[in-house]
Image (cartoon, rainbow, N blue to C red; front, side, top):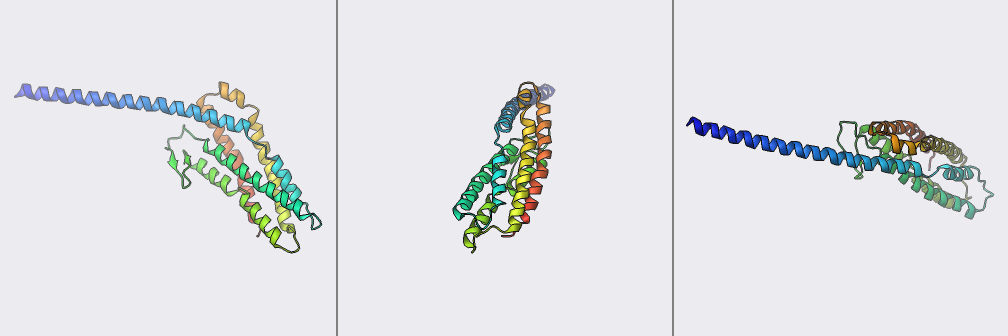
Length: 224
């Protein structure tokens, strides 16, 4: 009886050790996979940052719109408005994509879906993503364009022009902020360790956040 009991205990120990080994093996494979994914994500982030567009052309377009008078040819103004819409759409797509690649693998929080099916790894990343999306200018430019053609005489209100000039100034500031990090990304990609990469992402999120907040404030000043 005791012999059978000992055999049963031995079998349980073997089974337990086997499954613990498989669990540890699976965990090790998961860690390796996460490291590979993290490396790919970081490489994509650096490429996006390095090759990202300048926001100066869009700022220039908004500045021109802020200076048009009721003497301007409507076709010229409409061309500027259409150009601004395209630039705004491209800018929002780029900025939200850059933030999506700002995954924080040092954080203990796990990735989670957002309402638009993007994936975030930290509350800060999610917050800045929402700000970038909310500060997008496509809808604003569409509204200005719509009212411009509907109004008689065709003109852009002075208050709107003032806000556009301020938004242009903030876009130039945002461009300067991101450009300041582009110069060192090659070194970061070659020599920066994973922890410094996470710190870089966090710093940039903190740096761009005030620009998005300011643009949102300026957008709210425009009554369409």
